[in-house]
Image (cartoon, rainbow, N blue to C red; front, side):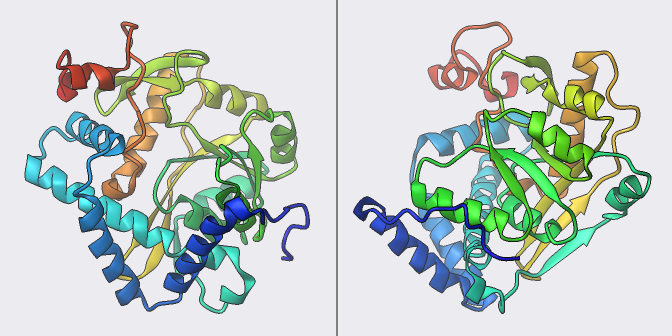
Amino acid sequence: MSDSPSLSVPLQPATWPSWIAAGCLTFLSVLPAVIRNGIARMLAKLFSLLNNSNKRVFDINIQACFPQLRESERKAFYVDHLAALIQTAFLLPRQWWRFLERIPIKTEIIDNHHIDQAKESGQAIIMLTSHTVALDSGLRALAPLYALEGIYKPFENPVLEYLVKRGRTRFGSEPHARGGGFRTLLKKVAAGAIMVYLSDEDLGTEGSVFAPFFGHQKSTLAMLPRLAKRSGAAVIPMYSYYDAKADTVKVQILPALDNYPTDDEIENATRMNAAIERCIAFCPIQYIWKMRLFRTCPRGGISRYQQVINGDLTPQDI
């Protein structure tokens, strides 16, 4: 597929540092896996020593969702997560540049017969995806096989926005900026495209209900069941992760949710969150735990993360 002609290249002087960084990342992407992943591991250990808000949120989430882990295990979990994040970042330039296509990203798609069966029956499909470090690479693996359409949040950095969108469009996927509406997307789904839908963020109370997630009440978007009901689509969960030993991105497809949606919004949200939990179980360290998953408090008031920092709440009681 030819590169999208609609993308304008940001070349203003203010973008030059970002282009230099992209060039360095491109160089790293062509190194053998053992070297790439070794560098990623060293950087992960270095970055793990830094303290920032993302690290605090990450640790609170892990304590809340995996209370059985000791402090030493949480620290190792964090290093492993950073290593996987950097390892998959090193793969991204292969999606940006045509001259790197001779060095493909090795992929393994597991159980995609769940998608094929739905398509063969003529049913529309919404793919329930989760935020993982290998999300882009996983969608890249599926794009040559299926027409993918989805909503994404644009990046503030114009170079990153250009490169990520370029990588997502070059192989058949069509991303739509958040806020653009779902009407066009639903028309394309009705015509046979697969909607890629991310629904694991806490975006506040508007359009959301509280439902369990890892045993805690989480503000959960209630849009998915409405989309599924309107389109008559099967909701098929998908999870992608990077296997460093095999240097392979794995894409795990799960069976469609049975009899979904119902007329009960909380039941719908509960089943969706449970499906996301089943996906995370395939490779927990590669889920994006820095997201403020439990930001909105069911009782109202300030963020639950701030309550933990203030000492008014424990992570286990979040």
